[in-house]
Image (cartoon, rainbow, N blue to C red):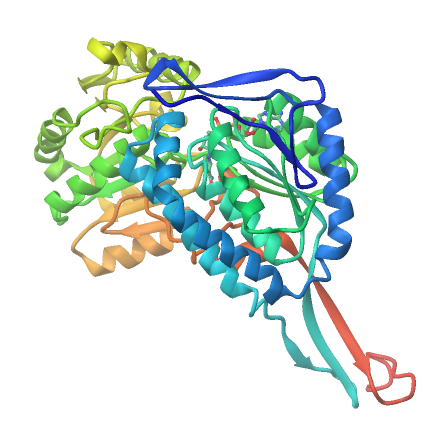
Length: 497
Ligand code: NAD
């Protein structure tokens, strides 16, 4: 067993305990007897210190040329590459993800760092003709100030990187508030930022509860922007606080993603996609496939293929390379998923496989739930409408392409979506008619790449996108600059008409 880590806050370049000295614990969800780390239970007073440090650092950091800011980010990429395996193993122990997926999570951080390091030499604005003679017009990106980054546990490296790196290249300073289930991953990541040599106060980390640290950050008058990824419920609360306190806010929330399998689909391919989309990361992805919309002509055949394949998935600790499906992250998640199985029974869905807590042998020390397929699900059922965030997929029969699109869209969310079809016309219609931020054709609902925008429509967010150049629009303001070199007053819309 590995020695537990003692995680600390990182404020103004110093590793510090909470001012109160209080601590919390992070335990291995595959075996709760193993303590992974202790970390500070911070409060508003710790947040105040971090905000002050970030505010002071901002004065200088915004003036550092963007290519030089990007140099630190490039160093983050190098260090993440160097520590990829160590960090992936820590992640797998701390939040349960299968080791291959944990490596993928770190790789996403690396890709992101390489991408935004390159962005330091772009950050393009526009030049455009003025309507007046001897006048020059252009737009430039301005940093926003001090950014609070509040993140969930399911992608403990990738999501903080998606936020921190575009924020930093744009010239902002940051305070990361990671989820209480992944403090050790967050501390490891911030140690990498420290080693990359960022000036004191540019990068800060405050651990603790959302209701204490997260809330204090959101309400703090000296925070300019909150970037949040997490549940829709918390997002609504943060959105309203930020509205009240006039902060810029970017919300990336839940999903209820569907994969359509048409009668002309390659069923083997669709099966691979469905299994990966539904049970990858134990279903704990915002883009997880939680509904399979199956054309009636292939439903029986596809269902039996899916059940057979699901039966072969191996549950176990993520760190074991033979594991396909790791544990849920904590006991609350286990109770939540179990609760949805009660709902499924009440709603008369049929459990084809799984449906129970798995607690045989060594699994009894972890938060394991059997990969579960629910049949006879109709679009109005709660299991078809609410985010379960676990290894549970609902099968819904559809009679036509049009009905599949209608049901896919009939949810309050709109994050990811997928259709398997051999018909190019249907593929293009689906691209046009699906209401979601992301659509995959002949691919599963999961698998975003860092240079494309990531986010959703409807209650999945508030119109922003992460990743790619879209993230620059979150972390910078446009300024329009006019340079009049005529040497006289020129009145727009008046003197030239
Ligand atoms: P959560 O909302 O419980 O917590 C997310 C973060 O918010 C944590 O750091 C938490 O401590 C903090 N927090 C909690 N209450 C707060 C408050 N009142 N004020 C400020 N901060 C607060 O979510 P979770 O359980 O960690 O993550 C799972 C959810 O995240 C799922 O709904 C999933 O769909 C969503 N998610 C969305 C995306 C996306 O990009 N759309 C990506 C990953 C996860």
